[in-house]
Image (tube, rainbow, N blue to C red; front, side, top):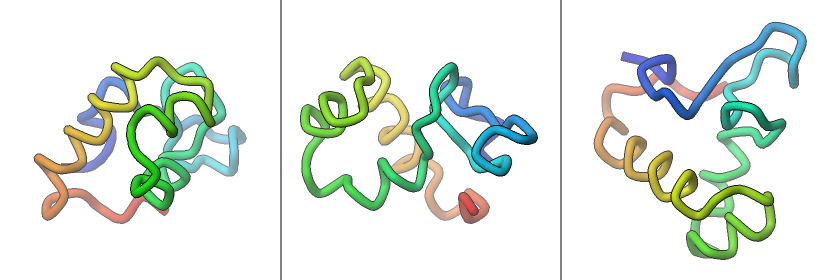
Length: 72
C-alpha cells in the first residue's frame, strides 16, 4: 500500500518534485504531518484546506501508518 490508495493525495511529476500533495493543491503531505501537533483546525486554516479534507487525510494516515511507504 502507498499513498496512491488515498483519493485525497496525488503525485504529479514536476509538481513539487513529485512529492505527495493534497489533491488539487500544492500542499505537501509532509507539511501536514510535520505540523500535525498544531491541530486540525490550525492545519486547515494555515494551508487553506477544508477542515474535512485535513481530517480525512490524517485519519487515512492513522489507519495505514505501518503499511505506508515514506512520503518522500
